[in-house]
Image 1 (cartoon, rainbow, N blue to C red):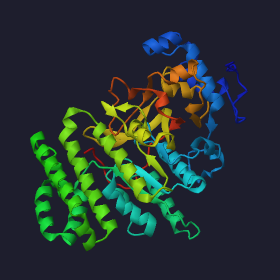
Image 2: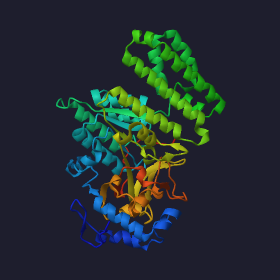
Image 3: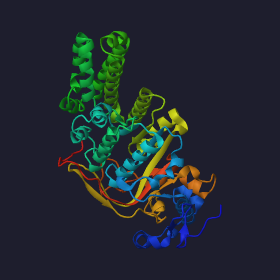
Image 4: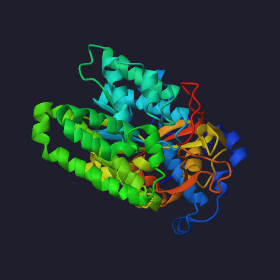
Length: 468
């Protein structure tokens, strides 16, 4: 493929003009892409990007980029129209984030949800939060019940207590209130990291259908029956959790074996909800039992199964947009095992679109050990990183479909080789030697969204949050 030059005045296929002139400040601070060392062979064998390869990748991205006018939700949807062909007939659109505390990432996901709902018939918004706690938020967006701020606070997430997520939830409520929108949009979590709310929900159901069984179950679940007890129990040895795992598994078998009787005393819907609450308990207990091994994949497998359960329950026409970290939505490996995105790709194939997020510089919110959540600032990304190569396009805000890469060339080789990319979770420290960068294979995403300059999320309450 003949690559165009990098002179000022280049236009991509959407007619937008970008070039070196827009990079003056960045070049002065972060260095030029052309100054990188090493050739393509070195890039593939030693993980270093040559100037030639970086230039080729940057030029290809510049030409293929779908520029976005703004991250702000009140920007309309016209600039997002080219994303229609990118989404296609996907049933799942998984939206990542390079940090858990970047305002523009949250806002772009809000805009994407509006687009998917209005233009693609999506029916569910799913977030990396505990499923039982999310039921309160869903009640608000569907029925207007309760206070949205209190519902959001109950999600217990860094991503939750923010103006950005609250604005999204209020938009969902406003959309559902309109009688012209017959198909309503639901809110759900797909995680299962804590048990006590699920325990409470399950025991409430069991007291209704099997009072004696509820007494026995309450004894088994007592160590995780409220927030303080569960927090204390997390410090118990692995042997305790091995026993608890077996006991919870026994309860699941009991609920299944007595399904007919329980449904007779309640309803099919109530039984399904109670059974899944107990499944969430099992997922949390499983994590407590294995977390000392450092393998996070059981959590990702559980999240993938929860997404599948949600879709199956909602029917064949259901479509869901997922909100989670890049590491979870990626189709690569994570923490010694398969990521949620990897599991879902095996389940749904090309019915799922995976979107990662990247940024050049700016600030974000994260936890600092012992000091709670606070803003951090990072400078321009190094030129030999995914973030730096995308920044070199000069386009401040865009999406690019990586599936359109010509097979076998330099660009394709770079995208299929592990590269450094910012991957910042709930915790961060300026003293980290890797600066928040991890080895990521870009083609583990179908699409990348890029933001040149970021700001931190805005807290929706005055509550001081601390890492649990």
